[in-house]
Image (cartoon, rainbow, N blue to C red):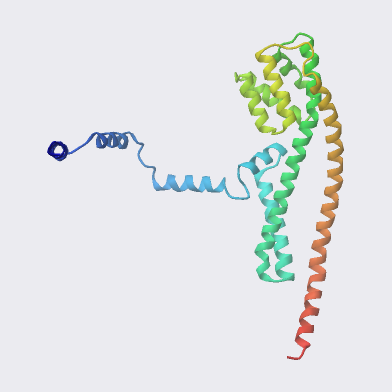
Length: 274
């Protein structure tokens, strides 16, 4: 017991005498190597930049969808402002002022839903065209071309929107990016199961060898899916027309019949004896 106390006392005495410890030396070195703090103006500018890119109506998913459907952030914000203000005026003027903020949120939500619907349609169109990609790749691979050659040579025979994404894939290959990484970026841009199946087959053929019947039954499956997705797009397009008509009718009813019904209710209540 005395030995332990003696050792502890010696350690405390050594620490107090030397004035530093190993941990303190490490922390001092870390502080010395750390970059100097940014001025308050730079910190404020970085905070504003990060906040403007992460607000609920314009997050990373929204930027991704806008980039794929060819929309601009300015037009998207303008549409949200106009529709939100319109719905806010209708609800606040015709019904009650406290409904105006809810109306603005509802109008902005309508524009967000429309953008997501456009993006979903874009993904469906790209997926439906993957059967054409498979047919072209299969013909070129059977003709003796390598996988990178076939990937590059089918671009001119494709049609938008899959042609645009395929051109990006070829540009990344020309820039020196490995085929595996370029295909991984393609699958990130088009998150769909059938697209992933095709692209993974391309990676396997490039890593191993091309079989006698490339893609096998996958080509027939994608051809059937192309017909189904085409019918789905037609039905959804007609369904969106019905939705737009219903929204317009609802706005008309609220803006016209709402004040009339509210006035009748007020006059009825005011005329009732207490």
